[in-house]
Image (cartoon, rainbow, N blue to C red; front, side, top):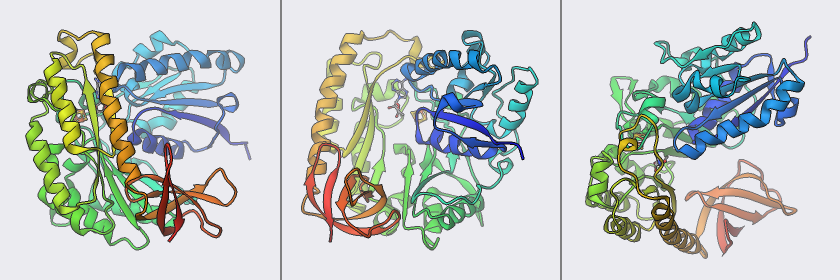
Length: 437
Ligand code: 5AD
Ligand code: SF4
């Protein structure tokens, strides 16, 4: 039998890309994964186009693989993901040693594209094909899995925020049918998964076909709640306008749904929110959070912020700082506005880098302080920890609490996949410490 070829995949960007990379590895029959690009017969970069820096990283990484290709002309180099979708053939013009380009909607065709490239062609597939890629992808092989997994349920976005490339790179909102998702969830659980994070660019806009018609995300979550052996459900990323009543209610009543919600707001200024085409105000967002916290008082909120969006004044920025104080996020991700070709805001007059940098550091100071306080508040509390892997110290295990904090515990006899109550004793720089309660 021929030796299997080796596939090296490097993943950039969001969790959806992590999921996609796994599926691409599975679809490449005859290949096994390797962690070292030097050993690889094929290198695949699964790329992110969300901010300029993310896209530029891809080109510099490709530059580094040039030598490998010179040493090993048979090496195939592919670019997948959102840079592939956005730039297409341009990638091969900038980096001629790239052999194939495949967009996020076409990766089920990867084996064909690889074969074409071995036959001397330079295939570029950035279609939005009619066929369902999830149906085309064969089932996941039955290898055992760690205790946590991603499951993609929805892709694409119809919101067209003025800064964002997602509606262009991932296309219109599409939801996978309920039964397909339930099947995949059962399969994951059989293979050892205890926690599933449902993924979608706009996951709470989920509207998949199920028994009796179209199902909401909340209804899907309640169906997953019935899956024996599945202990925890999470979902990300949500849009404020799609936070429906049944989903808010589920946070209060569904025991498997974890008390953590990533709900980006981007700005606290109504003027900027309008310019961003977010179609909600700061006050509407705050009211929403109030309702979510009524349903689940201990929920940990997480968010995204953009500073230095065109026309953002110091006053607008202050409104964002006020919103931060009002919400007090347990986690928040913040970015300087970065122009993305083809999006409306890229055409507008831009603020200076200095102003952006200065605002970002003020914002991040508050975010870090809040994160710290929220984490420190866990000391003395009992949390549930799903253990994932051994820690660095002898006899130590690491897992995540329901609030997604990493927790280190000295505990002989605890294994990956175990769910235990832990009393938190200490709050370190990036994680908590505790003992089995
Ligand atoms: N510039 C800066 N940040 C951006 N994001 C999306 N597009 C841009 C951009 N052009 C941020 C948003 C989004 C997160 C995934 O990335 O905050 O929620
Ligand atoms: Fe991008 Fe999210 Fe806005 Fe959609 S809702 S355009 S994915 S930021």
